[in-house]
Image 1 (tube, one colour):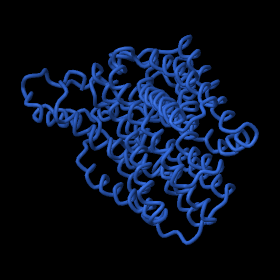
Image 2: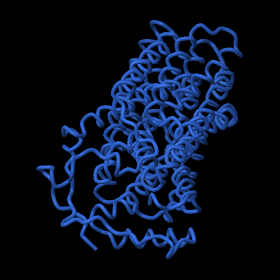
Image 3: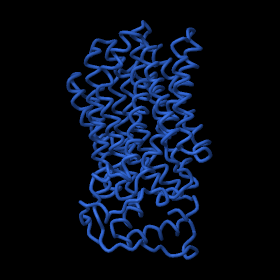
Image 4: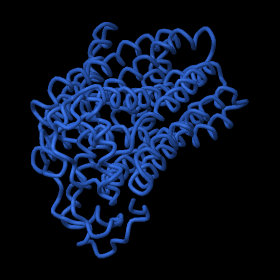
Length: 451
């Protein structure tokens, strides 16, 4: 895959994978506007809103972990289609929920499918895109996620005040099911096929890609790595001595990145309403700030392959802490919106680089389980985040919430500066830790039959 020039195939992969994360972001981010409207109309309470967000995080946690296991065990293609089908169908059903309790229950199951999309998307971009362009394509993928956040804010501003919250779920669900149908055209990952001993299938896919790029017969033939028997590497490898540093780095990045992004996108409209704004005005403030989810990925696309993931995370971590520390002291409406826009831009940039860095750390045999574990723990931390955010907001206002986030970003920036690993412009095989499947004591034959 690394020898292929960027062409139509890579752009199609980016488009199909990115449209999935667009609707994932749409369905995920609609909670901000929907919950604010439910609170204003009396259909829900702050406590029920907190439960809604907690069950969302629980479903996202389980979905991220399950996606990692399914991807490494049964293949990337099965996992990314399965998760789309779950949250697309449940989003449509949620539009007809008869009560807040029913909506919470449906959201819990829907979130299982949603939790897989970031694990799958960043992992697939990592496996399909050559190293010289990998950072840029990961940023473009993140841009679609950011556009989903921003579009949700605009759509909710137009839809919720006039038509209520139900159309938001219906729009997201129908869009997701359309992407599920279109993504039938994505092939299996040749890297995964080769590592489980299905070299002929991997070669056939590579030949089709070369034909599409008009390179058939012009490149050396694909040669599968010598392997006496495909092995299933156990989950415990993530905590083995050569790998545990990478596992811990990935977990810390995702905990801080997800907590920061979900606090801003999920709670800001509710905070504004509690401070006395109308729903319409609070959504307008939120839409202006959420434009940072477009600016951040564009900045990453320009910088990711230039400064690398390690030092990019250090830089954006410091900037998140700086803008976060300044935000509570802003006063006028226009300054609050500009400051919020810059803060969200930095938070989005940090999350994209952390999510891109995550799958690059692990070899193909357990890349998605490593990435899924980090995503799952990051999302598990979010289960208790509503209680933490409410306590900070009740005691110290928005300043207390943003100040706590600033401290977390600064600590992570220092950790990356001291103990980070650089993956920039390096092949995935070149950055693998020095551990082989045969050296893992509990390694088992692959459940996937050689073909």
